[in-house]
Each structure stands twice: as C-alpha cells, then as structure tokens.
Amino acid sequence: MATDHVTAPPAARPSPLPASLTPARIERLANLVSASPDAARVTTTAPYTGVPLADLPVSTPADVEDAFARARIAQRTWSATPLSERKKILLRLHDLVLARQEEALDLMQAENGKTRRDAFLEVVDIALVSRYYARNGARYLAPKRRRGAFPLLTHTTELRHPKGVVSIISPWNYPLSMAASDAIAALMAGNAVVQKPDTQTALTALWSLELMREAGLPSGVWQMVIGRGSSIGGALMAGADYMMFTGSTASGRKIARDAGQRLIGSSLELGGKNAMLVLDDADIEKAAEGAVAACFPSAGQLCVSIERLYVAESVHDQFVAAFVARARSLKVGAAYDFSVDVGSLTTAAQLKTVTDHVDDAVAKGARVLAGGKARPDLGPLFYEPTILADVTPDMTLCEHETFGPVVSIYPVRDDNEAVARANATPYGLNASVWSRSASRGRAVAARLHAGTVNVNEAFAAAWGSVDAPMGGMGDSGLGRRHGAEGILKYTEAQNIAHQRVQGFTPPKSIPPETWAALLTTGLKVLKAIGTR
Ligand code: NAD
Image (cartoon, rainbow, N blue to C red):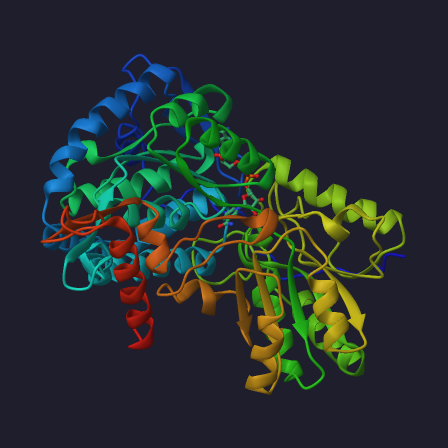
C-alpha cells in the first residue's frame, strides 16, 4: 500500500541554458564531429526543460570508415611519440579540465540533467585518471626483462605494443567520465581512438576532445562520430583493433559476440543491481547518509549506484527512519549551481522505465516509504528519490536494473543472509558494506560477488582508487578499467626471447637420450635451488 506524502517541497525551478552555452559555442563543438559537410542533423533536448539544445551532424558508416583511415595514419606517428611527450599532454589535460571545469559542469548539466555536485565528480574522475596514467603509464608500458627458459642462456623481454585503433562506445549517464577516461588510457598506450559518444551527451564528449587537442594531441589520433548503434555500430566494429563498450548488458552481449566473430578483444562495462549491506554494528546515521549518496547520484543513473539495501533486523527500523527522513528532505530540481541535491532523469525512456518499475511494484504490494512519483512541476523528466519496502520477487524491480532514483529495503537476520541475498543476482558490479569494525566490514566485502566493494562508502572510494582495477563480474561485464589492467588491455604483449650459445636442440655430439637425461637433471636442480 502506498503512503501519501510529498518529497522535496523546496523545489528549484527549471533554468534556461547557462550563459556559457551560446549557439556559437555549441556549433564549434558540433563541428568537431567526424561527418561530411552535408550530413543529416539530429537535435538533442535539455532534460531540465525539454527545450532544443544542440543540432549535431550525424555520421554515416562511410564517415566512420574515413575516421578509421585517418586514425590509422595518425596512429603510426603517435605510437612513435615518446612516452614522455604523451605524459606531458595528459598532465596538460589534467590542468585544463580543472581550470575550465565551469564549462564542463554547464555542459553536463544541460545535456544530462544531473546536479552540479554529480557533474563535479566527473571532473574529479578525469583529473585522477589523467594524472594516474600520465605518471604510471610509462612504467606499465616499458619493456620488461622476464626469466628466460635457460638461466643465463635465454634473454627474454616482454614488449607492449599498442593494439592500433580502438573503438570506444560510451553512454550518456556519465558523459565526461565515460567519454574521456577510457580514451586517456588507450591513447597513453599509443593507440588512436574512434569514439561514438551517446548522441544525447555528445557535446560534453566533444568538449573533452577539444581540450585534449588543446593539450597537444594531434587531431587525427582521437576522433568522434555520432549516430545510432544500428546505423554505425557495424562500422565501429569493423574498423576496430579493440572494442571498449560501456552500456547495458543486452547491448554488451551483442558487442561481445561481434568482437568474437572478428577475433578482437573487447572490454565491457555493463549494468548492475548493486547491493548495500548495513551490518548490525554499523554507525546508523553515517550509513543513512551513505545510502543517500549511494542511491540517488545522477538521479540513480549511475552504473555503480545502489538499488538494493539489506539491513540487519536489529537496526532495521532505526536505519529506515534515518534514511527515509533524509530522502524526503532532499532538494530535487534544476539549478546550474550547487544548491540542489537530486537532478533530473535524462531521457523520456528512462522516466518511463522508472515509472513502470515503481508502479508495478506498488500494484503488487510494495510500500512507498519516500517518493514514488514523477515531478512534472519541476521539469518533464524529474522523479522523486524513492524508497520501497515489502518488495517481492514477482516485482520487476526486484531483480532488474531500474537505473533511476529507486531503492528497495529488505531486513536480514545476519551477515550470512545479507551476503547470500546480495549475491543472488547475475550481476556483479558494485557493493557497499557498513560496519564499525574494519575487519568485519572487509571480510564481508570479500564474500560479495562484485568487482568493486566499498566499506563505509557508497561507490566513490573504489571508483576513485584508480590504481586498482574496476569493473564487473558476471552479467556486469568483462575486463577492467583503471590500474594496470586498464591500460594493458589496450596493448599486445610480445615475448622476444634471444637464445645464446645453446638451445633445446641437442648438440650433434650428444645422443638424444643423454641430452634428455641432462635436461631432466637440470630441471631438478632448478627446483632444488628455489628457482621460480
Ligand atoms: P545501451 O546499451 O542501450 O547504449 C549505450 C550506448 O551504446 C548508446 O550510445 C548506444 O547508441 C550504444 N550502442 C548500443 N548498442 C550498440 C551497438 N551494437 N553498436 C554501437 N553502439 C551501440 O545502454 P543505455 O541504456 O543507454 O545505458 C545505460 C546502461 O549502461 C545501464 O545498464 C548502465 O548500468 C550501463 N552502464 C555501465 C557502466 C559501467 O561502467 N559498468 C557505466 C555506465 C553505464
């Protein structure tokens, strides 16, 4: 049964576009799209208001092929550019992103409808990732001496070559982060990139391209095309030496199949149904605050945001009261400043999914503890931060990703039940565990089937720890971004072994049986002296 209440009474009114987004500025960004001069156009709309935002050229499959041809030529020079020079470009990008962040925040808000606070996290992400790969890329990519087959006689080196031209397909929900962070690693590794950002948030992606070129990246090395997956997806796959895809699990399966057909590698960052566990010794006020940060960033349109909350029975009521009070007091609305807590959904399709999921759950008996409805009075795509109880498996949102500001709370007896229920999903992207005990929190975290687990944090601790790999298990994806894996996946490993004096073939003077006996003894000696 739904309870009747109103969330977020002090609503902010929809704003017009910010002053930085003049028609001339938008046109300059649109001109960065790789498309022919007579290309068809597509118009995007601003989620806050529904007013037209950008008129963008649409790339054809032939435009994508041209982009790959240019990229292939540019990549030869780029891969010969010293790592020290690539590093300087990334460090300049770092400085430019921080210096020009106001422009990026305006763009992200206008295209995606998120709050300025949520947009700022994307600026932080790009600064972290560009600094990280600038300062660590050379270490990962440098030739490495490896143990040879024969001690002293075999000189073995591992080299890392760029794959060539990488395709990146990036979504609309984290338009700066998802557009630039994967490109940064691919470029540092000496690849060229042809990228298709989502049309809805193309301006933000193009802004990062503009900045990277200003930082010194030669123009052919990173190019962007715009269009539907059904139109140019084939060309993006056909030209690629490696595919980096971020989006839904359904699309990821298709991409993986096509990459398999072409025998190229792919990295897939897909959907989730992420769980948060509040253990019986958690600091409840902090956990409630953490749940707000976990469930409602970017109006829940964050791959690592939390949609399931498992709370120990002994603290359940206390936690629910604290969480619900906070959710109800969140300020929902549109403002190009830091005054708002929860922004808009991005597309009408997303609003429909959220509405359908909540309506279905309520019709089947879920209780609405907070939110539960759209807010057309704020703008066409706003939806209240929503907390549901009594959710059962027959409700769509129990198992399926909503990708909106909606979370279900379930009481659990103990840690074992919490872990078992959190793991009862084909997904495995992110999780969050709350406990006053560091050892207990970390021990529970290690039992969770998720690529990242945050203890006493929602998602930002693991996401921001860019020295460690991040990505999904199970239906949440294949491959990782960040850390060593985040850059080495864009390389081909090559093993160069130089054999000196004597190899595996016996010298003519030694009979094969004697040679076999000598090698056998040699292998035993190597084990005995502790050789690895
Ligand atoms: P989607 O898969 O429908 O589309 C994502 C993007 O991929 C779009 O720009 C689309 O045009 C493009 N695309 C899809 N199929 C394509 C194909 N065959 N060829 C070329 N391009 C293709 O996903 P969506 O619903 O727009 O995005 C939200 C989903 O993305 C959610 O499931 C979310 O969890 C996931 N996501 C995951 C991560 C992560 O890091 N794991 C990050 C952000 C979003």
